[in-house]
Length: 377
Image (cartoon, rainbow, N blue to C red; front, side, top):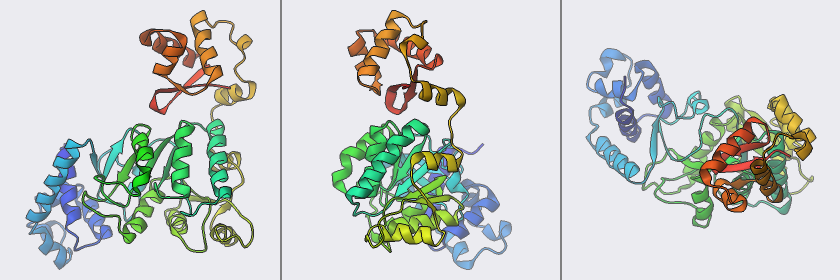
């Protein structure tokens, strides 16, 4: 069995050997099965891969500098709670693994499962208008009632990205930001508080080593990760050219579903969306319900019934007095964390945890990311 830490270390070193592109590296990886195996054969690679390119053969014979950089990166990651995910790691986004230009290693700080059942990226212009902000807010708010178990991915940039992350957090969704630099910094700095919150209700993900600056081309590269790790891409607002359109194009290339909200004819930040819809590059999107139906993401019958009927007290005659205290607290202010519920109900944490588990089985409450509990209305 391959040692996970060693595999990540070797994947980092191979990534640092930049004389060959990602596609060639992945082909070599797929042929030998692991970064560990590639490094084991670095001095006789032609014996196992006869058609290996001369530049690749030469670069594999001189890995000392790359290994030193990888070891330094590993030490930093261990110190600051960053998880290096080699492409063979089961925690690595498997949807992205299917893409021909997937990174050999990713760096992750967060709590969200990157392979959960439903993942959608929401992207668009950095110059998000009031119309775009309202679209993001209403879509995520409505998605919560239509399909509450979705991981929302974006790029933590100004505009549509940050509004997607913040609304996701507010609605109890986990949300992951894909960065164009290493995890030793954050760009833009003013999004630091949101990013910190995301590490406890989602996460931050990048292919870039520490000390990597947020260069222009890095933003283009990170867009393929945003698109590749998602089931669907939603373009909210875009000018005729922009990063959101690049992400949408990549999503189509990866055979992902692409949606776009329409806007007024002639509006500068709706032009990209309107053109994409006109050219059949995206499905015209009107609502969260439309999106969920198109994706086939309707929830199970029990949850739909709970949403339709609401949680009326008389529907649950078997609620205990303590359970009614919890329902009352959540009725006044829904989506509360465990410690806040303990304060408002005056119940010990251990007892409250047991009650919430029983209420979940009854279909009264549902747990969400970050220890938040939602009363099914």
